[in-house]
Image (cartoon, rainbow, N blue to C red; front, top):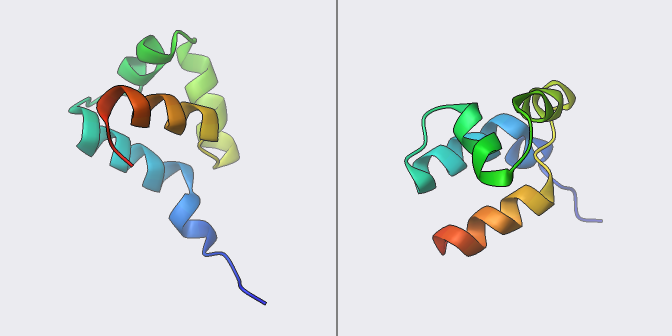
Length: 65
């Protein structure tokens, strides 16, 4: 059975990658791009999960994987 390294999919790892790929420095920039409230980003951070929908939209817009 194959195991998944959950650290590789954590919120912080994903957010660091987003910041590197976009040049953003603040979570509010992510929220603005996604058209959501900053509280939604904070909620995802507290859960420790970066929503795949967010990652997909960013990947498409910035041509990154």
